[in-house]
Structure formats: C-alpha cells, structure tokens
Length: 454
Image (cartoon, rainbow, N blue to C red; front, top):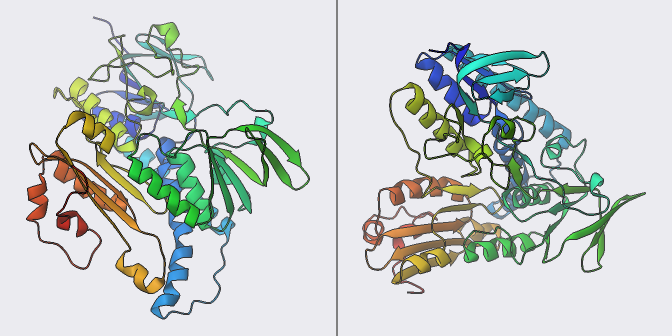
C-alpha cells in the first residue's frame, strides 16, 4: 500500500479550502495547506467582507440626509477615504489572523507558497522545488478577475482587486459590467460622493435576476444620480491630462478618473498543472466535479468558485465541509445546489431565493404572483422617494411558495429567513396565518392577499 507524506494537501486557503482542511484535520488527517497570497481567500481579503465594509460606509450619506427629517441637525458631514481604507485593512488583517489561528489549532500546516499539481498524488512547490505526496489533493483556489474586455487602452482599467487599494476617492468613476460586483461598487462610489457611470453591454443589469428586481434597481440607481448606460461597450480609453477619456460603441465619450472593469470573475486554474495531470476542465477553465466534488482523477477533488457551480462563499464552505465529512469522516454528504438565498449589496439592497418569474411560469402553469411596492415608514419623514419591492411566486396547484424577491433596506437579512421558510416547503397559507409584526416592512410578506397575476 503506498505511503504518502500527508493524507490531504489543499491548494488555496480561502473559505472552502480552510473549512475542508480544518475539518479533515479534526478527523485525524495529516493536512497541509498551500496559499500563495493571503489566508482567507477572495471573500475575506478582497471580496465580500471588505466590500460590505465599503457598502456600510457609503450608506451613511443617506442616514445623514434623512436625519434632518427627524429633527436632527448634523451639520455638513465630511468623508475621508484614507481613514476608511486604513480601518478596512486593519479589520481584514484581524480576520486573516483568525483564519490562520483556526488552521493551526485544528492541526493543519500552512505553507505560504504557490503549489502546483504534478500528478494524481503529488504537488510541487515551485519556489523551492519540494515535492509532497498526498493521498488526496483538494483544489480550492477560487476565482480571479476576468480578463479585461478587448478595447484599445484597456491597460488603463483596474479590476476588483485593485479597487480596494485606491490612493484616494475618485471624483469620477466608470464601471464596466452588469453583475454583482459592478452593481455593488457603483452603489458604493455613488454613496461616497463620486460621479458614477455604469456601462453594461446588455439591455438590463443583473442578468438572471427577476425582471421586476432588475428594473426596480435601475430606477433606484438613476434616482441616485448613477448614469446607467445599457446596450453599449467601451471601444477605447485614452489617458488625458485630466484623467481618462472613454469612448463607447455608439460614438459617445465621457471622462473619468478611474475605470473599473468589473465584468465578473473566472475560475483560477491557470498554471496549476491540472490539465497536465489529467484533471478535466470545462470551456471556462473550471474544474469538472461530481456530486461529491470529485474530479475524473479519483484522488483529486475541488470545491468553491474554482468549480463554477454556485459562486458564493457559504456554498464553498458547505462544499468543503461535505468533502471532509465524506472522505475523512465516514459521513457521505451531498451538497444541495438548489434553493439558495442570496443578496446583492447594492443600495437599495436585493435579496432573492427560489425561482424568478419566467422560470416559475415555465415550471408551474398555475403560477400566482403577489407583489407589493411601497415607501417605507421611515421615508415619510425623511422625504426619500425610494420604494421597496417585495414579490412572492406561488404554485397555484400546491400553494407552495417557489420564489421570493425583495429590493429595499435589509433585503439580505430578510431573505436569510425566507430561505428557511422556502427550504421547509412553506405555502402561501403558512405565510397568511402568520401574524404580522407592525409597523415593519417585513410584515408585507404575510399581508399580501391578492395576486397581481395568475
């Protein structure tokens, strides 16, 4: 029987890799983890955590403005980008240290170096040439920013990696993209006072979301002064004395200080030796895995964004846990990739779970649609015109709720609990007999009585 240096070698110390390594080590496995950048991965270091901190910062502008309607005199607030970034960096360093400590306490060894797969049971550290054999190899390298769109002058654009480390707050920023990252950063910079232009090649933002959600957000963003440019692409970017001159496919031009290309992320498999080791990749470069996160090479597994299944941190963590339980804990575990609650931290915020209306209509011929659009109570004194959208999709034949969608304050918090209800198979009757908490926005979920379509 072959002997190996370790039972598990994990490449990538992000959320999925760290969870898998910790749990495997707690089961008694000998574990090494290689990370070439910083421990914590995209989410902790340059993704959802620092982004959410910037989102919080951007929303204080609304709070200061709204306060006057409630009798507060807060003077003229000022904002300092340098302070925000320094505080953000301090918090990220604290979280990274927690990840390191958790690995150490679990008994997993961290190697701060790049690792490359050399075969079914071997990895090599290019910096030293050291080879390590492993009974199992787990690829958990996550994603990286997609290549810049092909336009002249694309070297002047930055990605979502660099945007967290700008020296100063730009007065004018142009964002390319229509997905989570583009929408969220457009909201952040608008809230912090920058002039924002959001350019997307499609007819609407947030492809794959419910149409009411998409149009509601676009209306809210335009109300906030964000210039949304749809059905157009960037053709050329020129450096000027005052910043950047950006030329679009319709012949128009505008100026910006920063151009952020936020056209999504792709699996980080480049240069990892996977194809050479026989690991199958799809056309996007994602690692192809089965329901147990196993590749076509039986000793090699992959979890998280590198598989391009569901690119969300909680899913990477769940996949890492399931892998460790299955391989080292003798607890065969499959991960359900359906009915996933998710949030977009735009302002206003978006929370969704389940099917969008077009999908639901295709699956459920007797679909009923319930919808509420209203100004929240807080807006009556603040004077803000922004509205909340709530939408329920119900299978008329069973009364089961198959989709819930919200645009408005705290949508992310609300959809977490909606996810619990839908995962339990909640019906519209279950919602109807639940007593409303008044006065709240959330009470609308249990007081919508008449379908707007069905």
